[in-house]
Length: 464
Ligand code: GLU
Image 1: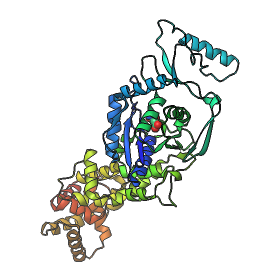
Image 2: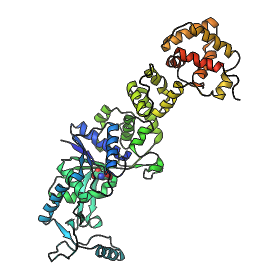
Image 3: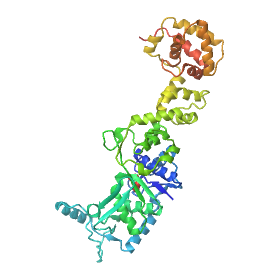
Image 4: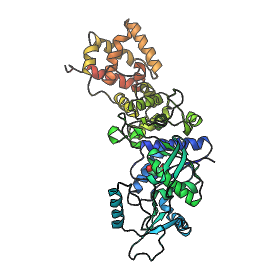
């Protein structure tokens, strides 16, 4: 069975690069009827926080990426890791190292002076004497001392690492007994039955070390996919300065999680020239072997465009719920669906939508000078007064009814809609831009429409 995982270290928030590898892992597991695990790598008790873990879980909830089973916390698995450390010690595949910090510093300085790569020289590898007193030893694994470690990466192809260039007997347990990162990752990936490990290629240099652990414990090695980074438009590593990197900031900026996932799948993977993918299509088409082998560039405009496409087709009730989470509750408004539908063609984000809806919900505080100058000319006042008189004798509720009624008025007065439409828009929203006139009328309703027109008529003079 295909098993994948997302394994964040909770040091801050969920980064969009992390969400992308999580999505890739999720899709591959679900596509194959397999399992997708969420494992929190919180063994570094000094750097990890409970709050950061909560933030990651919250971001997962928002995106709707469902993991199988409970969240797994590495911090609860220390006893298990200790067993494996002991096993390697018992089998003479690992050993205690008593080298002091001073000793190691000296060793490193000597290597540097000889222009050698700094590496642990294995001085305690075969130590059989009496351990020096007062030193809490670390545990080091016996890594190969020469040769190559090779594996076929699902994205980068065949990779070979020269042991002498990058490996030494690395530490698997610190002097306080806590296990180290590469050790626990390998143990967990093996014990949890991971078949495919999809992660950022910033982890590529860890993989040979993890392979050493797999081999020492006789575990099967999963298939690795190292995904190239997301870069900024200048080709540098994406950072806060380039825009939001925290997934939850995208929620606050008014993006749909579906659109963000769509954007992220396309950053590094493609299918012909298709841009919009539903979750079903992603599941059908995604294969990690098709992930691009070169880095991808973050493009904010593209995200906005994708979000705008989702805005046009997202179920109205879902948009209403999302607006509520962003502080605008229109759920009890009698025309809530029309409110959204009338505006969504012109809104790229939920924040733009919220601002536009707010403009319509509240009577205008001021009138756009340019619009006033351009459209409130000639007999506009008489025209609006006549319209008010006409309106007060009629009933209308839906956009269609307002349209019918307005047409009747236009015929009676023998004028064209152009003369009436803009003054009414200005009365309703304060500006000459608004959605369809009849939608707007139906949303505010007859009584409020009359009030707003009366208010415009009562202005003595407009600011120049
Ligand atoms: N915990 C690591 C990180 O947050 C990821 C480990 C992995 O995917 O192997 O960067």
